Length: 593
Figure (cartoon, rainbow, N blue to C red):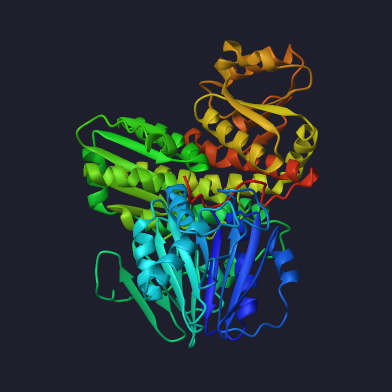
C-alpha cells in the first residue's frame, strides 16, 4: 500500500517521479505528491486525488537536484491536502515520504508537542519527520538524526528523505515495507518496487529490514541499525521488462491478466517439469513428507487458493489447516511436532503474513513461501521458496496469480506422489481456458443480467465452493455489489431467508459426486423466485445451464471455473462504469496490518 519514488542525478527528474508514481497506481492510493530539492529550497506539490491531477499541478519545467514522490493510501487521517505526502518538519529541515504504519506515533507526538512542536496533519508520518528535526537540532548530523529516530519507531516504514542543505543526497530507511534502489548511468533511484525504475536502471538492490543510509548520483551508503560499518552492496538484475506494465491493446489490466491464464499454466509447466521429472528441491519434498501437519497461511485471494491446496494435500494423506493470516498472527494455533508452514502471497510483502513469519521463526519451524515476487520479504525469510512465474499483475483484483497458485499446488502435490499425469491434465486445462476466453461474450450477457442487483449469492460444493468464495470476492472488489458464497447445503441453515424474487444465485457444478445435490439446492432457491445462473462442465450439463465449460479433471476444475467468475465480475464492473483496475479503498500490496 502506498508507493514511493525518488531519484538523484536524473536529468528528467520530473518525468521519472510522475511516471514512476503512475506505474505504482496499482498499489492503491487516494492522494499523491512530490517534493523537489534545489539550492537549499524544497518545493512540494500534493493533493488528494490521482497522479494525473498531480501531473497538472506540477510545473512542466523543474530545476532540481533531487526529488521524492508518493501515492498515499489513507491509514491515519482522511484523504485531504493536509494528510497527503510529502510531509515537512516544523522548520523545514527535513521532508519525507513514508509507506507503513507507526504504532507508537501518538506517544511520540505527545512528547514532541510538549517540546513545542506543532502538527498540521493527522498522520503518523508527520511525527517521523518532526522527530528527525528534533534530533538534528540537538546537534546530530542528518544521518545520525535519522538513525536515532528510527530506533524509536514501532511498526513499519519505508522512508525517502530530503535534507534541505544536502541537495545531492536522498536518505532512506526501511522496516517491514518494501524499498528498492536502482542503479542507472550516474544516477540512483528509490522505489517501492522495480516498476518505476525499469526504463532507467540496469541493476537493483533490495533494502532489507533495519537498513538505512543514503543515495547520491554515483554513491550509495547502506548501514544497519545494529552495526557501525557499511554494508557491502550486491546489485542484481530482474527479469521484469517495461513491456510487463503495458496494456498491449487491452482496455484494462484485469482483462489482460485474465486472458494471460493459459500462458501462466504453460510457464509453470516449463519451470517445474522438464518433460521427464519434476524440478522441485528434493529437500523440500522430503520436508513435506516428514511434516505431520501442513499449515497454510494467506489472505484474500491467496487464502482461497490455499483452500484448494488443502484439499489436494489431504487427498494424499497429509493433515492440513488453513488460516487467514491476520487471525493467525494474533491467535496462533499449532498442533503437531513437525509442522511445515506454507505461506502464500502474490506480492511477498503482505504485512499480516510477515507478522506470522516472525512467529514461525521464533518457534523454529520450517517455512515454505509461494510468491510471485523474487527477492520479496517473504521470499528472503523462508527456508524454501517457490515462484509463481505469473508475470507482473497490475490490476488490484488478482486473477492470474490465483491461477498460478492453484496450478503450482497441483504440480507440487503430483511431485510428492510421483504422478506425471498432472502435466497432461494441465494441457487439457489450457485448452479449456482458451475455450472460455473465446466464449466470453456469453459471460458478458450473464454479467449484464446481475449488474443491477443489490446482492448476489454464489453456491458450490467441495472445490466448487472454494471457487464460489473467490468468485464472490471478485464481484465485491470491483463492482461493489454485496455478495456471499455458500456451500449449497448451508442455504437452508439460515441464508435462504435472504433469497427473494430476482436475487441472483450463481452456482458452479464440476463434480459428479455433488452435482445432483447442488441442483437440488438450486430448486430450493428457484421456488423463492431467485434468478439462477448455472456454470457447469460438459459432462454434467443440462439444457437450462447458462455457461458450459469443457471437461477437465475434477481436481483442476477451479482453474477453469474461476476464469468464468473473473469475466463475470469484469463485465459487470465494465457496464457499471467502475474503476476496474483501481477499485475504491483497495490496494494491491497490503503492507499494513
